[in-house]
Length: 227
Image (cartoon, rainbow, N blue to C red; front, top):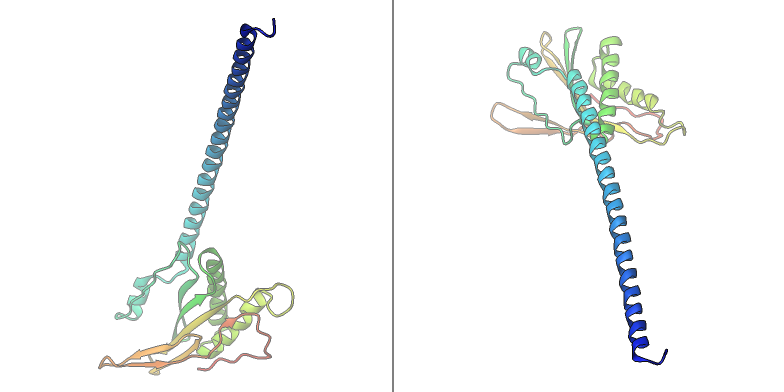
């Protein structure tokens, strides 16, 4: 009986059926796995989107805090009617900031470029802003070079630089001007930043500052800025 055509046809039909059933089972399994993977991807995507929204919301909130410490433009306009501010951060929060204070009849302006962008730069800007307030408003230092000298030491102390504790080389480039209307003088000091003077005829004169930043892990015995 196993040599009959009916047997051969039955065996072939059985093999074809088994192969068909196997393929269908495999397809169903793959389809189920695909659906599971799609669900996992969708869940992960939603998590990433939610995390991104939370991060952006947090950074945007931080921008409000950073903006709050920046001197308002009307204050500048009141003190110097022809002044202007060009401030265009690369990210939501910025490592660049400007600063202003008055002490003992002296007006002090600073433009500061911190290392890093975004959140790291914003942290540095908060440190710089607070140190400048301490140096000028609390200690009463108004000489530009002395302000930068103290700012340099303050950053190194705040970040524990040069003590082999934390490896950080963060610092700031600064251009700082002091102005005394009563005594008719202007003084300036720069850390890796120049001063450009525009005279009445529109001619430009560039003054280079000291060729090193404030802060950083350099271990020289003393870094002295020049007024």
